[in-house]
Length: 314
Image (cartoon, rainbow, N blue to C red):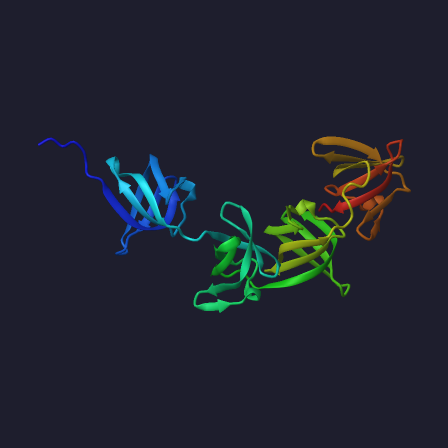
């Protein structure tokens, strides 16, 4: 008896997970789970379309043909799962809109359909119940609008804060921001390590914050977890140069500041009549600190005419 080849095996089921490149975990109709590997030349199809491995989705129903070395030589997608967005809500910028950050750090805006079903376990939620920090799975339908949002893990309870940034201070442990509320009271809070900051459609970094920014913020665990900038404060384009104060040299004759502007080291003199401000406060030369981020307007003698402190050092 001469064996000319091995009979091919067909496995059908639903993709449960995609644990790595060219590997799938599928569940068959009896509930049995099987791990399969795709050959490098495996052909993946859905109807008349050819797909790439990256096009496969958890929930897709598939039919796999297994050949030599237990490798899948052909994979037919018989029914497509609806696409999902999985991650943590980092911002809730408007009605029926959430911003989600996935495990890879990718950020995606998700719009919820008017009849979107929002659940947490056996509970049905409304849009206003969603929190920054919630871990969610959003199922997308027509026009990439979410038809269902499943809250997997709840974030901390949050509260809203609106006002104007009065001061920004960098410390060894992070950045602290003071916000003046509409009632005139100041609130000082640290930024969370994963704080989400935005201005319009642009995501910003903590160093992009400015004194005078009008903000709508979200507080959780006594930290700022979201900052939406409504109107921008003082421009960082003021003056001739800017940077971080590296050293301050003072004598009876002169007051010299040395700045580091992304590796460019510059020194200038600060005369007694120089105007120095930080937000709405007027400072003296002696109030300047190492680590302060400043902008400087110079005259032709390389003397500071005006200094604006943007962020305070320790």
